[in-house]
Image (cartoon, rainbow, N blue to C red; front, side, top):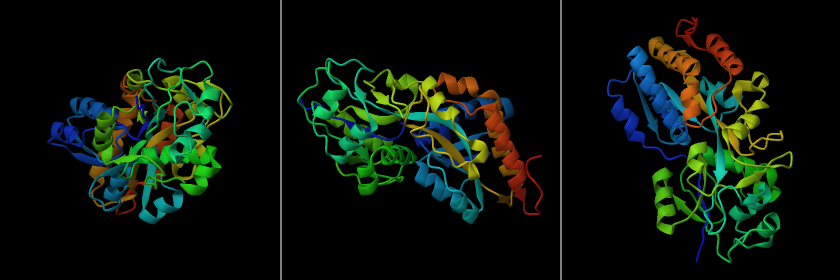
Length: 346
């Protein structure tokens, strides 16, 4: 038996679905795949409520950043936040729209979902190719009662750029000096080992072909269909991935003092915090030749923040707190203007 570990570092999404459903779209966006299901749900409800549509292309964070920089869409979406200097250079602002987590998954015979435990350093060593078998002493020491097979671990990773790859590699860089020195953090890295797949579809095809379990960014309900693992957090507790543990990680985020809302939620303190948590961000230009379209983008997210929490929870996302929404709307008013310098958001 050759049991494998795959790294599917992004949520599955179909980029054409929302575009097809919103033929008469008034606003356009492109980018991160992980938030696609909730953006689609919000868009459906918003269209019914207002008559305004949304055409969102789920093409990955890198593609979303490129498209908003070239001004081919009304907003971009990225799981990797841009630093304040980058935003200033591009004449943009960003704000968080939704939150979720990256969850290691491994289907091993005789081991129940949520039973297997890993630490960040051991997970990094798996992706570095240093831990090659499931019964490696490093894994066995964390799981003394588990019947670990003498089987190879094969990593399947994204071959293209992904914001979730950034979240995952940012976490590994925080917990493993070796990973930080040899690989680092980015939307696209030179993976030390494993098999690559382009996009979610390509990675999923590799996983299916290999019958390989995966490490991927999932919503809470999805993980129950897979053999998810526990992770040791910064406080030293082993925690299960859940809406509660994602919320615990997000609770310590200091959005008020984060320049440009640049906040990364990996390896956050807290007894219940899930260590590989991240937000997905919206990017929009400050100045607009067509302020009506920009205003519609803001209205869409204002409506979603006010009316979309239950939809987010039903899909196992973590909604942005009201206190942070107030900060976001203040940033809209202060920064987003028409060509005459008048604020778009009143």
